[in-house]
Image (cartoon, rainbow, N blue to C red; front, top):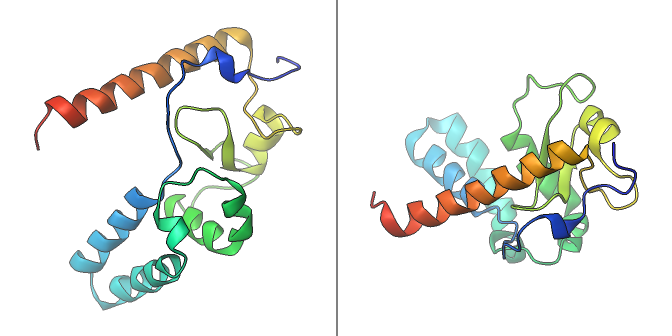
Length: 150
């Protein structure tokens, strides 16, 4: 493991922000397609999030997540499968195209996160591979947005 963690400079600069919009859109689809119970469940979640307009927009200031921690935890709970275990499974949610996590299981946190800044730290070869994968993902998103019509 690197003692200092992965440095942001190892990643190409990708102007990205955290957004819960894809989750909210998924909830809207579940509400439209689901039965009464599903519609009520996701409807209540959606109403709670929409009551905090800043959470429905791209998030630049991550302190907003701490300010609305309970609500953010509810959003995250809707994303992570119930069958995952905090102690036995590796999983995390990060700001797109960065190594800054906003949520991680205890196992992931203990194994991969730098306690000082919450950034993922891995061996140098793994860091290079992750950086390359993140760059490819950015290219795929750009190509899909501008060249693949759905």
